[in-house]
Length: 430
Ligand SMILES: [Zn+2]
Image (cartoon, rainbow, N blue to C red):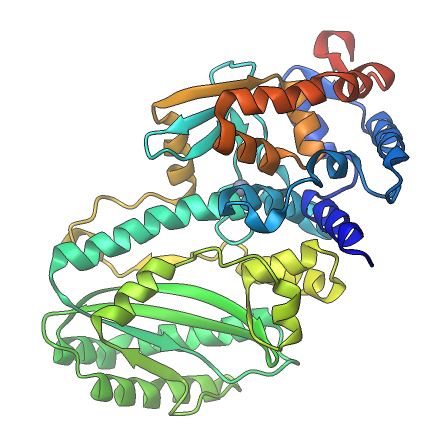
């Protein structure tokens, strides 16, 4: 495969292909438009044909023409997150999850347009859309939620002035283990460790006043590797050795009862330097480097869930199956849990759930850059162009976006609208 073909294939994979879903037509009809998905599919096919006159693969869709001139590797990460989301929405099994509807048009306060705005922190955001608030499956929502959670974790460490230590619980696993069972065994053993009179005594002895635990997953040569990080706040300098040995005995015993195992050496890790703790916080749910995932996989190193998603989006069947397994296992699981009373004690406000964090951002004051009509938005969504729009806005503001949109507002959008009549006013349909 030539480098150019490879690039087109990658652009296609990142942009995602495929036809419109029923859920889309529901969202569209709510917004006063109805969507004819079969005809929309036809028109997409025709678009693929019309872009193939440049002599390249006829299987690439319209977005390839518009974006293949750009090198994805040099994109800033937020544009890539939109591209990754578009790819994830089309992965097998994702229709059942809210992420498949993320960024569909959803009129807030009767607004008829999608707005691209610049927020006070200079970040760009699209408004009047439905966001899925999924910290596990959506790279766009996850990154917003995680940045708020990281801010709180950092503030708790700073404001409390307490000593801190980071404890990690893991269990032995192999390729044969499925993630749901592993996670259940791990969570159950950790919950049992943190219960009863023994635990109260343990907290008292080490003067642990508050804690926050979080879930994390990687996948490597030995299969899934779920782990629980437990950040503790103490009134005295932590005795790492004692903490490790006391927890290990109890943790291993509970795991073994449910048929799993953790060695006394590897099951629990305790780190207590300032650097360990700040490293954990600054990396909490960060979407890691998304380039060269294939190469990383080939070397046998372990992948984060977002790297796995990228591999799945690029067409790797094994990664697609793993991603679906991960979606099922993480369904409705909290990513971060504070101990009772911890937030108060550490000077944090009342906790917002994931959805509230996303909603709050929608209400923030911001600077208008450009608007899109719903039909234009569905064209953008369907062709996987959100990342591109974001990228243009980033480098050239409203002018660059408008120049880009001129290419869409011409023939491609007209064809999308006229030939297939895929959008009709709601009053015209029954
Ligand atoms: Zn989302």
